[in-house]
Image 1 (cartoon, rainbow, N blue to C red):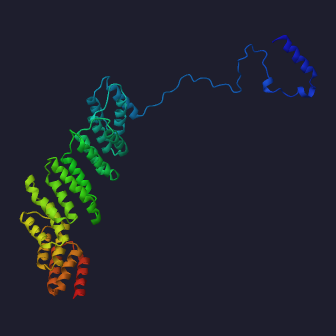
Image 2: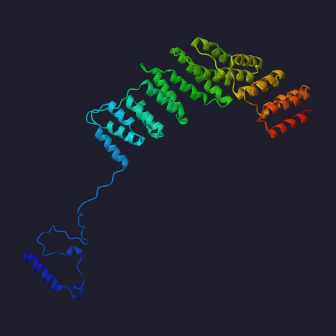
Length: 381
């Protein structure tokens, strides 16, 4: 330390009162004269000594499998290699990790085949949010879209209630493409999705316009429909009571080489009965029975009630007998409708005889329903 600074410090200490010397100096005036370096720093708490070795973190089974598959994918792997690796994964999350890792590698790009595989895996594993993310990537142009990939996306969107409109957006994109036009599978998915919303009369007419539009576009593309698609179109028209259009499609089935089945007849004569054209509906019923086709129980009961309210009681009784002969039974309301109409026509004795006969043939009627019907007959008499 310089000599002048030492003399200044000594003179200062001599002039300072003794009681002030008992207090420690502030930290700024604390010097270590014995230390040769001014940059040396002391610590109040010494640091912990370094550990002799660090234990590595244990890898999870998924991480181990991921590293194993990554090692199997040799440099220069192709989309076929990635597709095979994705199909071999029992865990959808692991498959998604491999899919994302391979997309980051230089010189590689996913195709429609790998996107189709991973989307199917995620949907089957109920990873719907991840599947939706990948679908948005595909729609945004992540890869060229093929017809199977288009149909898979539309099927997924049709199955999710909040993606209903998105399915038709994808369909419009498919319609505008040059080499991936909609197929019969595409229209089957869209018609089926629309019909699931035909649950109320006022809602039916809202979606009937979409059914008409899809039908025209399908014909314009030259796609030959099958019986299943034609039945859905007939069902849509019948539910909206557009009976003439339903009959027109029914008459055109032979042009496409399709034969009407029990569902076809059932949809039409149910719509005719609800429209008030009971005679035509009963004629179609007899036509289908001549072909050996049996309608569903709901179609039977609508026809029975319609015939009874049109005062065609003998025809209604014949349909009830046919229904019981095919191991189906009307519900309580249907029985009651027919029997009450008999009473209104002054044929109470016939009503009691019919009830006893139906009780013997319908083992599911039960004592409770039988008593309800008997009481109803007594009230009407």
